[in-house]
Image 1 (tube, one colour):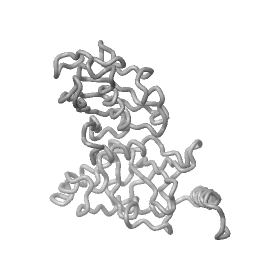
Image 2 (image 1 turned 45 degrees about the vertical axis):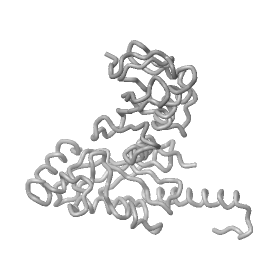
Image 3 (image 1 turned 180 degrees about the horizontal axis):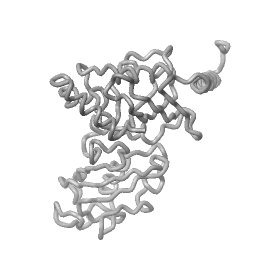
Image 4 (image 1 turned 90 degrees about the vertical axis):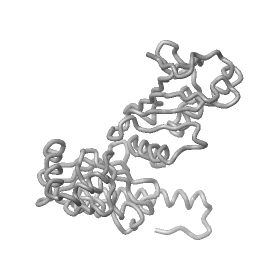
Length: 166
Length: 139
């Protein structure tokens, strides 16, 4: 899709807005047609850019058997700007804070318009398997993970049972 | 335009509040840092200079419902204050009598509520109203 270079600015802006919305809709269709194992994402009826998400805790991680609720929002600038995502289910993880905010490079400076909702959710699932206590968002959890990983895993498992059981 | 959902809007407001707004005469933050629904907030207003409120610090409680920011927050003074839009029994702000709440839009925010209340404190009608003793609280 392209517009002649000489188009007036209001037309160009409308064109960009429609183009970005088309990307949102086609990504959503693909997510529904070809879902990612262990992940669900459903847009709200009244806001196509706002998704209810669930992620299953990966096998072999302390989050195994848990189902975590998240919310995801695609801002107006998406895909030029990254999606906004946070956990709604409490989780004991060094890169996720008390309000469910996630420290993940692709959600910030490492975002690329080539990435998609699908890749973002897979990266979050991978973060559950591979916490990174050297780049913490929850300093007390990170300290626990670094000083006594076995005990930190025990707490992560407990929280998973308490807050994320199906 | 994309409509920013309540929770992401409140996260933005929280981050702005944590950095500090304006000249520091108004501030706000979450009552509990693990309030995942971000419903309960504390606000602080430093009384404007050259008024009866000068140097006074007022604490407020702000509650954001499920409908925020389509609907305005509920606001209640914890510190005693005499203003025409504040109930003298419990400190609750009368939505109809405070312009920022009466004319609420999605462009309004926790910041604009506090800034507007402070502006009202300094208005010609309110700046000299007799005030309860400093530091007293509503029961």
